[in-house]
Image (cartoon, rainbow, N blue to C red; front, side, top):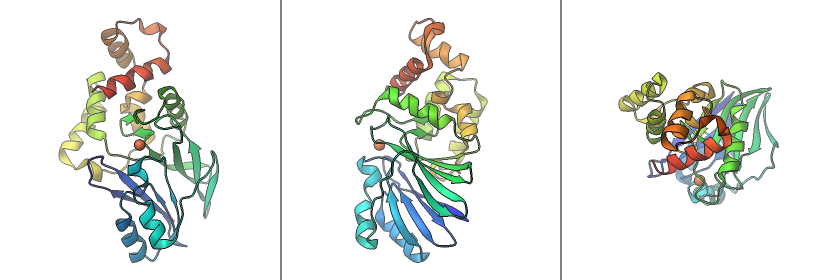
Length: 252
Ligand SMILES: [Fe+2]
């Protein structure tokens, strides 16, 4: 049995970090540790064995806890190439995928059970109802290509992003699709619960609310291309629309 534990940083950037543990062996992988002390407590209290640290990219808020864990456990940051796999035993594995766009070096980690995909640790590539920005050395065209790759994962895959940006992303999504009932429901959910404590959602749901995964939506195309930019929507590719969306979200 493999267990995912989520750690919310309670900081301004609303970072998420994760631990993936094979419960039989206690072998544990940590993803993007923000605060090393909470991981130290978790690992020591549960008698786990830290196998290594995985970083989706090198921005400071994703590697902040590395040094504390290296010092405490003598572990190291593990670097993998595109498509390399970490075996977790019992037919579970973590597959590494290059997803440049937010940064050149960005990778995601995909927990797989056999051939099926269970969870996507997406760092700052794909968020709830949004995608990462390209301010810190990124490239929006590469982000589009990476988003297309992530969209191909199983619809039942659970999304574990690097930040909780649901409120702003869903508000932006609603401005594009005011009639989308699921977006309205998800915003209402945020009124009732603290969003960082909401359970992860599936890619199936994301495809129903995330404008960056809904480039064929007539409403979005009309709103962005015709009403905002005064273009003829027939002539605009998905890649171009994605770029416009990213720009509009930057200014939101
Ligand atoms: Fe980042």
